[in-house]
Image 1 (cartoon, rainbow, N blue to C red):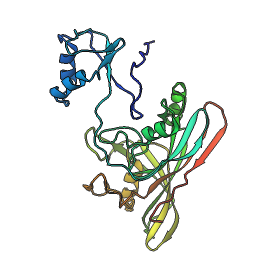
Image 2: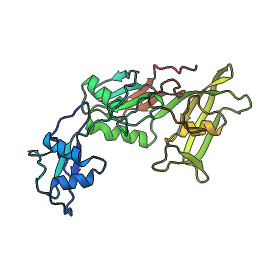
Image 3: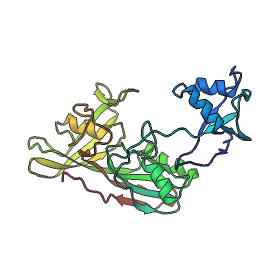
Image 4: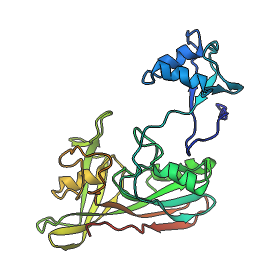
Length: 301
């Protein structure tokens, strides 16, 4: 079993330091030369400034720019943070114990740091607000989707809860608002094959063996709009949004389907009307049945 090397740097702004391993077959003369090659998006002058600020460290302390390359060793550092517009919505803790935290993630807030969203994410906010530096998510919700997310307090338990989601042992229920079509026969089960190509923001349905399944039910309708219950048995990227669009009732506020829209990141005026409403499972640690329900409501209903 590979031994985990502890980070010599504490978290900063709720974020763990980045760690780079110097390859065994590397031929760079210095650590700086390696970092310049490994971090091509960082200006070399900025790398030099980070060395001057003692931002790069190994297990023995700060690393200097002229330090010799040492194959198989590690270097840690905190990345420069992007400028982020504050997301003006709170993360609400629905439940908390010594093992898990269940939180209501608002629309427009990413679950975990990714791309241009780092500190303005549910994970980083909860780490800071709850003083739980080891908190990790058991699964994720898309940034536009609101609702329940399960986080694990103790890292050694993360695998048990993640496996529960992987093995489809969690019953998930969503609600969505979309146009009401009286001619649409509901409830129905939608099955299709969904693919998501790396570097492409949207997913698509293609011919082939289905890998995505959703039960769609109409709960109520008024003024030309319907309130739908969506129960996925799989978890493909954008599955619910694609399946609703395929039924001819795309979810209100969807910036991707049926047409990809170019919206500013700080445009909070049209939230996707999709809410992760219920999480239900047998707890893999306590063996107790668990059921959590979101306190959020969809603005268009």
